[in-house]
Length: 84
Image (cartoon, rainbow, N blue to C red; front, side, top):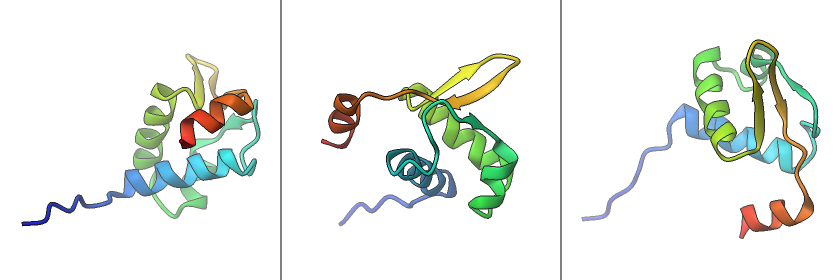
């Protein structure tokens, strides 16, 4: 029997944010606005926050407690390694 994983809303938002970072829709150093991202992806803020937490753990996003989040400055080598 084939094992297919369901793609969750969080997974979809995560992939969209990653793609937006890679394509410079979200620029390195840009402050992250959860409300704007939720509106952009047609979701509530909770799945956006969960996707951002994944991206923080993978070093795509930096979190500054009490100051917010921003897109991490990524080197070309980092991007190549991530997408390999």
